[in-house]
Amino acid sequence: MLLHIVFFVAGLVALVAGASSLVRGASKLALSVGISPLVVGLTIVAFGTSSPEMAITVGATLEGQYDIAVGNVIGSNIFNVLFILGLSALIVPLVVHSQLIRQEVPIMIGASLLVLALGLDGAINWIDGAILFGLLLFYTAFLVIQSRRATKAESADFDAELQPAAANEWDAKLPVQIVLIVIGLVLLVLGSGWLIDSSIAFARAFGVSELIIGLTIVAAGTSMPEVATSITAAIKGERDIAVGNVVGSNTFNLLGVLGLGGMVSFGSAGLVFSEAVLAFDVWIMLAVALACLPVFISGREIARWEGAVFVGYYVAYVAYLILAAQQHAALEGFSMVMMGFVVPLTIVTLVVVLLRHKAPAKAD
Image (cartoon, rainbow, N blue to C red; front, side, top):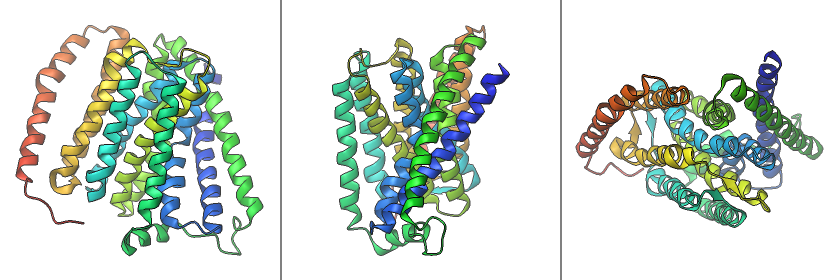
């Protein structure tokens, strides 16, 4: 067991380090050839933070470990919104840019609904995967075109964060940037293999399903780049970036990660969605995505109390998974309290807050 723990930790470290190396090398390379910082931020950096999810899901799909492949994506999306946004809001109330409300969150919700629709037959096959991945390419092209109309203030935010390497910096030369990209890819492949193998061992040792391991431990582990990015952005006062990173990563997970996972499953039954996922977890993912709209619209910020609610719901979700896995006697009472009191009270509170902020806020 100790060896599995070592490989699990090593896998996490390799995934985070690989994502960082890949993003740095690709970003510097793109900036060096004249691509604008805004476009780099919207594409390479945003999608690069989701590269661990991509590595895990593709690797698990190729090995036939579909519960880990699917659970990783669904669990990551739930973790990103409830835990990362919640924790970031507890640090400082998060400002929500009007574009997120008008465009990015509806796209994330639409992607969630599409994945649900495609997965209801029990799997994302290679045709479904091609559709999802094609939509990601279209979405990326749309962002690049839209960035050309970005205001100077929006461009300046990315210019301050992303700059081409100066001539005297260690990563200024093309060979170094290529090496960073290669190292990043190698670490992602190695890390995903170690994490998958150790996760399967944990599931067998503790008597829980691979799905639960994928929904919790693996999902949280592969979301570490998003954790670092959003919390750092919140502390530095770049609160819109903290929110945008999570929403963008969730959309990429749905369209890109599940899309590629479905495509590489060519010749098999596809990326299989278990009955447990279709009965519960995918609906929780959709509910979490839908919950963003009233929370974001209410005053165009995520207040500390809303952040606390998000974190609390994530703890409750994990607790439910653990109780259900053990068929614990407390499961029925826990479910009754959540569905009969906590959830209705939360919905009523959100409706009241939304009505109080019904008057349109000043445009960004």
